[in-house]
Amino acid sequence: MNDFSLIISQGTIVDGGGGRPFVGDVGIAEGAIAGVGDFERATADEVIEARGLIVAPGIIDCHAHSDLTLLADPRGQSMIQQGVTTQLNGQCGLGVFPVRPEDQEGLATTVSFIAAPVEWTWESAEEYLATLDRVRPAYWSGMMVGHGSLRAYVMGFDSREPTDDELRAMCDTLRACLDAGCFGLSLGFEYAPGFFAQEREVVALLQVIAERQALVSVHTRSQREEFTDAIAEMAEMCLAAEEAAGAPGSIRLQIDHLKRSGQRCWGTMDELLGLMENLREGGLDIAFDVYPYIAGSKHLSGSLPAWVHEGGSAAMLERIAQPETRRRLRAELAEFERGERDSNPFELAFDRILITDVGGEGDRDIVGRTVQEVADERGADPADLYLDLLIEAGGHVSAVFFSMHEDDMREALAHPLGAIATDGLAFAPSGPAHLGNPHPRSYGTYPRLFGRYVRDERVLGLEEAVRKCTSWPAERMGLTDRGRIRRGMRADLVIFDPKRITDTATWAEPHQFPRGIEFVLVGGHIAVEAGRQNPERYGGALLA
Image (cartoon, rainbow, N blue to C red; front, side, top):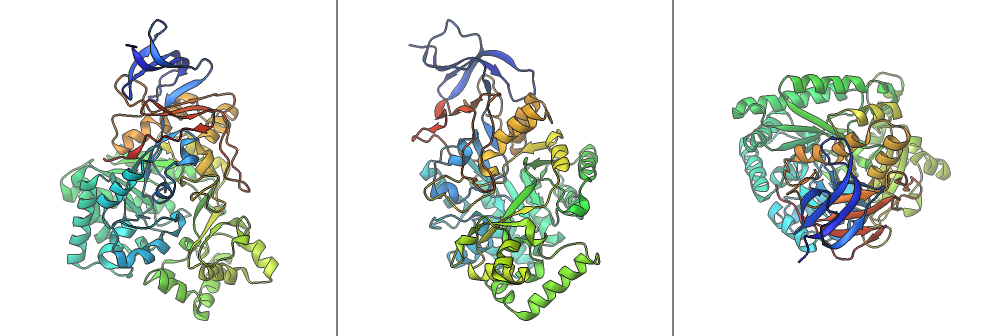
């Protein structure tokens, strides 16, 4: 009988904890790391010669939106091919459970950014997680409870405060989702219906999180000039909830995809980082995630003001067809352009908004073009075109927003409190998860980090970059069985060539796998070898 099922021989081991790289062997048995050292004389069923390659823990993507695409195509190709072995979905408040059957269509439109061709057959978190586990995804997928779906489940899409009974029902439903195995609560205060929530509602839900010592992630009310105030607001509500629960330090607060969005606030990333450092020194367990791109992505309607969304997606689509709505939006845009208001009701100039996917009856020929380009071609007012596209596609339009500055992004990438995350979806070059022209982060986040920002530009060192992709997100999620290379940990590993690793996905052609990822292991099984994915899948639903 052999000593190990698999030995990874003479690779440069980066252990995930921030320690110095060293050359050695990793022995694997029964899906776990059985030893790290010199196994020259040991025997194994299989040996991977890794001389000259980096051996790192499997990447833990702590902020993603593969809730539906993993069900449509459990191969999870764009993620596993870049080294992701664990992922936390259900972020930004964009949940797909709990949901009543009669509300599925409305919720699906609200979360159209994460849409995929799959039948919604579940209602509860428990039913969703069972559905996910049955399809046997290629990697492990944990779930957050989306506040938007939680709120809609109890009180619909109304722009009002919940009654006392409704708020108790929301808290009880949140507890049931956590009992089912969800990792925490995700909030999306820039999206319907999350932006209708006021302090009383949020603090009550955060009390549940404090009681359970769970994770809360937040897409704050603004990621533009008001981002500093938005983080401070969230911090105050967390501290209030901890105090009410009698549990100081019990909430892990994660700020979603930290950025400085909009030219007016470029060059001020240090304000956000300094605020979080001060809050952490004051006792709040706060951190953030960030991706290595200067553009974000979401559903097109997500940029419209809160008043447009009152009453849910159907009411929104009816409202934006009305002349008075368009006059008001144009007036707000003119005020922004004159410097009389802080926010653009369309978020950015129309030439900085790239259409990436169109559903329903929409025109798919516009995918890959900016709103301004399409408007110019059609001789249309770009504001009218923006709204007409949403109506034609039943709200199912996704877009990339070029809103950030490279220097701000680099500063966030290098900060020790930042985990690296995709904020993306599991796509594929073909099949049911081949959807539109998505943001290239879904294929290239981690190879781009290690190739461009570690090797080429030296924004951060290799061991720190690995830590920010592995043990740090594991710690934020409360995981203790993965994220480091040491005896007893899960044998989820990624092996890559530091000289070759690079992203190839582009804005024009995003459905392209990276180069330089030689092996990806899930539970000691080879899931990817030299770009070829094993048809066998070794992941599942990951429970907290």
